[in-house]
Picture 1 (cartoon, rainbow, N blue to C red):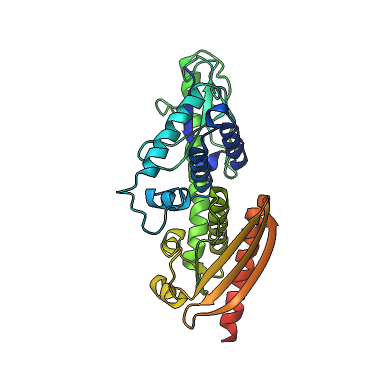
Picture 2 (picture 1 turned 60 degrees about the vertical axis):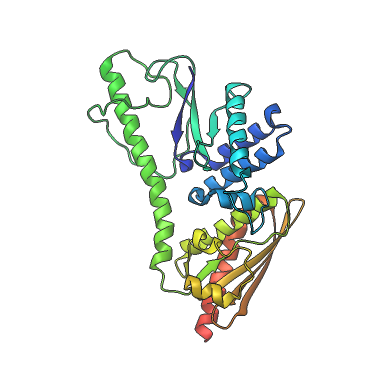
Length: 332
């Protein structure tokens, strides 16, 4: 049977994952499945953004299915019900019209985090000729590694394994195992670098609240979440300011509380409040930094962009707001 190998989200180019997502959502199986289509797009985008640990039932209910503040997952099972429907639809798709697709997207039971796998075509089992893997994009440069002694049962190298001796198969299997370890380490290192820069900074601290989009559209909610995640990540990478985690800041989403109370609870100097307006594919953002002590706006940035420029927009907002925070602090 065809098989597929799960890989780290960072090991496959995000563009390849999004292309596979579009392929799935335009398939006949998803033609009249609006709810689960929104759910799938949301969890895939959040997973690609590195926010899989925040994909909890309560958050999904609020951000995908527009549940209000009174939403209680114990009483309202919409997320669990739609997740089961989504898993069934994905199984149907991957066993039907999508059986030849290069990437497999699944939502494991007991989780709302998307997993991505490289499909292995053909009837041959692992290690035999005919078992091909689609190439993956490495997260960063990988040093050459010489094969060592066999490391047990490992997946074969991408491409057709040539040669029939047991020694050749074992060496290639060991080499694949080493590359996998290096790849995962590269992804983890990139994530740790961003986190460390935030923790090491002695500059002003900022909490980025979820961008408010004032829309019932699930697609708009995804853009708002991507911008929030992007600005948080870019602020951490700058190293000139510190930024609290998305998980800590998100608990105050939608709460009508004074900025000083939120700032005190999160132990930060500034709160970033932002609004997002989407018309067609055009984005308009107004971002504000509020002094957490005196509850006064000290910096405002206004931006226009198109939907395909979310990453660059997040970088601009992070750079400008960090500069605004530093300038304000220096003037006090």
